Image (cartoon, rainbow, N blue to C red; front, side, top):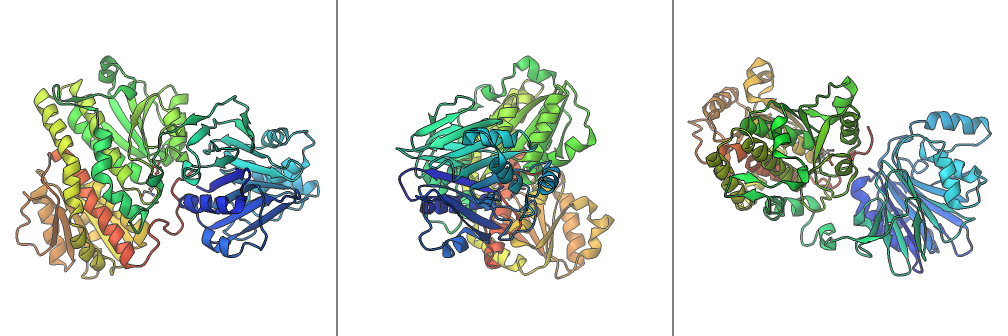
Length: 601
Ligand code: AGP
């Protein structure tokens, strides 16, 4: 949540830093700033509230240097103001720090510094690091930073400049991601590959607790790390011909869905090959319960996944928001399989839940998209989602691959238990057909745009479904509210008559999810209740479903194996949210108040 980029080398740093920040803006976009060391070893800082493009407009003439750091912020301590924007400096103006993370003892340190006569100018926790580095008497910059970090508790990915140590950036990581990029006679520091991928794909992934000193001649880390080449297509970080990352990522789904399934389906035995689980069949059989943990959309897919596991493997499975789990002193059982779900692999609530489980001796696997991310590393094994980089704040292709990851897991757990070969083969075939069916759903884009235009006019909407359809409704409502800023509330269709029906009126549309399953006729009952009260209805359903005579706007996704219907029913909801936000003229990739990776509790 907050993006960091740093450069040291022969080129003028600001244009590279600005380019990097623009690519990192999805991590936070309420303020931005740069610090450079000039050729006369002076530190210059420019920072302000607002987007990176506004910062560019306010760069002072001659703002340049060959060593620099930049930051794009998502406010935690103090509002989004010019003063609270990073970089933060010490009292002498010779030290500059950019930071992603949270310091738990910031108030205590601020009080201590203030008692020592230091004037703190911002509301941030980060500023204390700048003062602590500035006050350190250690010889090298790395030692100064280490000494400062020895006094703080919390999480950080940070980069530090010091006018007394020209041509050097010191970087440190603890809980917030940070990488080094190795160029030709130049070096980069970044919170995320997106910032530097156009310049280098030779990187060093820092570990928690590790510090690095970076100059144009190279780098050294306290962990003795070497650089490695990573296989990534820089085009994944571009919108290309599309007007937004969200649309691009929605449209990529037939291809990305095929990728998570590739090499993992076994037609012959109707099962899956999931070497990354690091689990023997004997161990897989021994679990008596499954607990899924994730946040936001990852949690809603977790609910779909828990349903699938219960259905295919007949093991009690339940999803819970990872953000709540740790705070209720959870009972961690040896015969429960814990599953952490995350696109970024950075979400702090999910990471802390994983750590809590491990501390109590539980076994956790991860369904994670970002390879080598903190959650992936903290888990005992898992299934990588292979959705490719997801840049839009609203998660789409990763959500789809999370569902498919659960389908693979459920099939595996089912086949080591009582799921028959025939059912296994039926589901393998169903999974193989899904990418093509997703492509068919995407063909209904124009029709969905018309429906979305109407929905966007409503201030408030319901999204409802039953059993399989309910987590789909929850994810649909989440996506809709996230980028359209409309009030979208998900409800189990069966619960409507127990209260919320009171809200139904001609100005309150309801989006109803009706899979072609044995609850379809019951769903029709709910439709009738809403129609009778004048509520407009949009029904996302499948060809076999008879909606009777109820007046609705009907959108069909292709027929599928019943267990796999949730993901096909989710895709039109992504497009409805996208088109509604477009109709309302919102910034689709960077919705207000949000950020892509939530690395705070
Ligand atoms: C999804 O559209 C949201 N932006 C958000 O709910 C997200 O799914 C959640 O913050 C979890 O992120 P993760 O998958 O990276 O852990």
